[in-house]
Amino acid sequence: MKIIFIIIAIVCIFCPISQAYDDGDFQIWNTDVEEFKINDSLKGTFEEEFRWGDNAREFFYQHYDVGLVYLLNKTISFGGGYRQVYELKKGKFKEENEPYLVGTFFADIKGFAFDSRNRFEYRNFDYQKDSWRYRNKFTLKFPWKFTKLDISPFVSDELLIGISNRITELNQNRAYAGLGLNIINNIKAELYYLFLNTKSSGNWVKSNVFGTKVKVSF
Image (cartoon, rainbow, N blue to C red):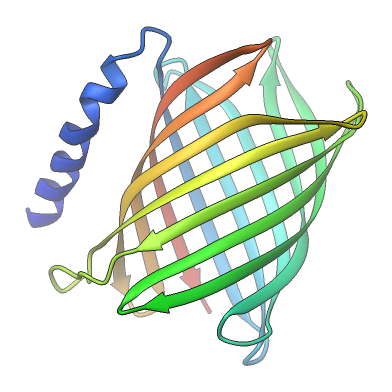
């Protein structure tokens, strides 16, 4: 009941934001992650994500991601991987091939955990010109924990910058607010609200997303 109350409180806080935009679509995103420890510094990851749009009535996106992450020390990690994307465009699912490199910086100040993830993607298509994309996601995790599930709040902001034909352009911003929790020792979950701002045909289109994420570590 306490978890349900917290979720309802978050939704109530952000509902005025959602209703302020006539073009705001409601979406649902679900992400599942599996991590495999190879040694103390290296781990493998597998991720799949599914998205529903048009007020959560239409399935429009899925991706499958496999990668490696190397922890250099307590403050830096780097790695790379490959993501296969299928996105609904004009009634058909279009394919994108996306190899990437990623580096993350960590810090902890009086219990507040910060991280900044930097990711470079090469986006290969068979229906449009290839391009590059840079993504930076900054996350702040608060030190407060509630209930036996160690429920703790976090906020994030991610910028997505497209690079094509020597043109660099900010084309998406994702602002998150959510809760992380430990289900059991090796299973963690997140519930979050995402305010999504996407540039399309020169105009910024806003969407409101309810997201879930489950991570299993082996």
